[in-house]
Length: 442
Image (cartoon, rainbow, N blue to C red):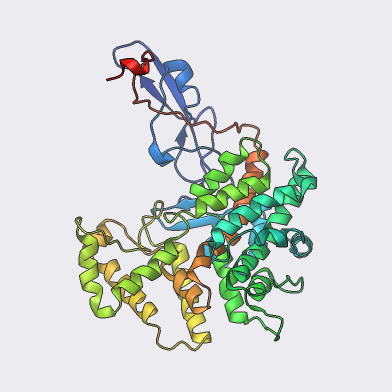
């Protein structure tokens, strides 16, 4: 990673020139440098000057915004939040400290963190009428369906913080979302298993409070295991933000219309629900169960290499990372800590995972394709060991990512250069034609 940030100036500014073949039309496109990372071509005037658009399905080569929140170098396996390496944050920070960092740009002082924690913890209860909304869902509804509906419904209950042009109302909405989404998530689980809802406790940390609401029942006391709370704290930190992924882009695109923050976060949750985005750790568990035993790994590795086979090694490779996902290393260590704490001496899934990782990291097929383990490879094993059902895996992802979505939404709202999102297209349909009456159709 280059530690020297490029500086844009008249002397150092770079550009590229595009010329339309067969014409005398051309234009100069300025390059915008990032603090670190590659420069990007500013094509905003391309259509106006040359009458053409760019074509980039999936937006893999397009920057839709400027952001100061998260930086990823996929080739080097680097993830920074506001400049701080994810490894350091996961080791030393609490989730709410990282939340403050993402939202405000700097690590908080003790006084700032105390105030921030107070504001979050005193918004954890949800409107009592929302209890009745849960009853409108079937007991077997997927918790992500419940999450999408309940977070969207918050805009019907908190009218005093819907003005996105008011900084104070934006702040109140942020506190409400960060604080209440874990409550909604835990209650979605409680509703699915027929247990009474557990109200939050302001004396517990963010991770402790979530585990308490998930597991406590009225008939006996429940004490949160500190090792499991620390594991949950790391899981939340590792999933807090990840630059312009599908769900974050969804939140930004929804927010660009002026939609209220509850609607925008509900849209992000819906996007996260997709198995290609938020459901990968569940897919890893299913894959390991299918492999069944360490002795079967060579057979399944060969299946993964066979282009005619539908089998894929889940938890390996990433759209951005072409190196070892830095979050996966932290998750591997956390997995061991959780299994040791729970006295799980012989966990076949973990043995399978570690042997599969070892083989894949030394097999030329996977090495050449840069298919390294990602964060989902171990997180499913951790959550399973903690007794969390697979249907809740993506819900936990949503709880953690809410703070990233809010930070990205807040940054977008405060950016004067942002406009309503409106991608263009390459039209491949029929040219203009006249309507044919029914009697004249063949």
